[in-house]
Image 1 (cartoon, one colour):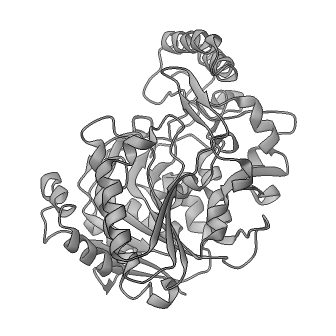
Image 2: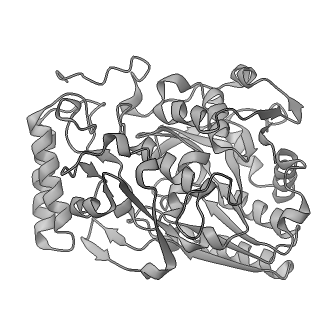
Length: 448
């Protein structure tokens, strides 16, 4: 199949404002019609009939604010509309699954209303629909409670990308600098070292005939944007395998923040101690020490414990590794030259997220749906529609190279369009605090 990106706008039929766009989710049949319009003829019934389908929404975390319903996760009603659309094509079965952050309360995502909707649609079409939490570890830092091995390891494939990893150029022999917030740093040495880059991928990916990702289009504090490329991170079941940044400032060989402030580095070391003691009383002690040291370092918006800034040079590499796996990885843990499965992204951008995404976004009246079989070009198009500078966003610079020498067909509302033509329909998204000056791209600000 040729590579394509289809965009459908909800506007001008519906005003491009939040109140008008919220109403789009309420008309189930009209939402199915919109989905059908953006898919067009790119998902023929023979691709779906009798097949196992994996639907991967963006279920990053349960709602904490009233606006989260609209801009944090793939909207429940969008999921239900996609589910019915797929069931009309007569698949053998459908699995809906994701691996949210470890503190996510699963039952607050799977509300009674959502579960009843899934059950009723499944019953109507007499097709099995299952729901799966792909996480191996749950942890609530507020009560210091950790549950490990929620799912047994034999439900996953430990996939080693090896020297093909995008992380390989920044991996140093004998140094364990990789980090992810609220995880034990010592476990990274096993999963990521020179020549070894392992990920914990659910076997459901390899069991599915067709994978359909349903991202919520948002800004992202570490990667700049989260959509098709970033959404598949939820197929990895254990974040001990997911480097998000490297400890230290840029003057220290890290990428957590610009410069080399010693107090911030001491705060990071204290946080390491906390994460080594999760579930113990020492966790709370070291967490408070880390927070105090960080506070007295007088951080600015560009500084973040979680490396939420434009100089993060690790997260985008991890994301691209996972995209190698989903496109070219087989059940034997090998990266092949040809694509191994039908994989589509159907993005919920009716209302997107802006500001401090992915966990604390504000609503963005984007007013679009996208459907694509190339995550790279899908996200490049979405970056234009969000008014971003792709050339200053490492994930998108890498994305452009990922599908090198391949022709891509772009369509807007069913009509052919040049890639650069999408910018005419842009609505400028507010970037995360750490990305305020990303277009200047100065990562060596040691005075801040």
